[in-house]
Length: 398
Image (cartoon, one colour):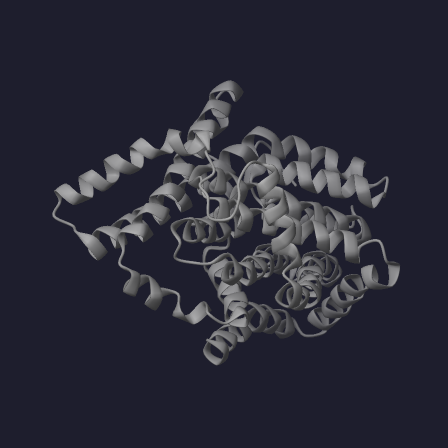
């Protein structure tokens, strides 16, 4: 992965949270001592939580009519699913999109039932990053075949999980019920305010921002809109720098050791690796994107990579949980736990059964064969799955 003294950073060019390979880090980034970088990461997480709280406050300031018009298109759960896909593809960060959803639920602008399909859609949208990374090997057929299969197996598992669990959730509400039970066990109940210490830590900076914007003459909807935009900017910027610095702290070491760990097989071990790495770097796409070049080189097999992506699915939910803790809202905590419950349930139901487990693997291998035969198929696949179908879905079902 690394050549010479160049240290590559898995970040998105201009996008937060989820990474693809970008240019070499600056001398300043390379030379920052580890303790100082760790302190910086803690500070950035705090800034991220302030941004989430600012987003929530901005939506509360906005009038009810404005809120209704903003979210009119997600009254239908299928439309909500496609909105979740599109929103995540646009920022290439499920961490950012799910945190925004948590903020909307905390503000009361979005109900838990409407938010659940959006969370599931974010799970599909986040897989676009490592699929794009795999296109970097398109000129070498053998490498591209392995890389594209390693990337799209994540797509197909998340699609399969949504196809199975979304109808069940809409019919029974089982995921929401599990999440609500966990929330109540943690000390909250529907309609109440959960006393989160983190909320108190982020409250003052949000108040300062609101007062400053008010002093500039902004009122009501204009003030709310400005706070929402400022909150989004803070969230996206903070996640960008969290990802970059966490990569410097841990991901280089992890990358060197992954091959040895995954070579032993064992789905549970690989899932644990994916979980831990993703929690550490706050980005599922860093984890899965690391796998793509390893697969291209033939170092790690598709069947060893597959469980790593499942662990990454669970690990990425920590960001939304942090955002929920910052909000102090029981409903926000519930929707964040729905995200975790959805990913864990998908693994528990689908992975243990060999025939079902084989579906994403076979689909990924078949798609890779088609992509090698016609490179335009790879591009068409990305555009169709992540842009065309969601746009049509929103237009039809809203």
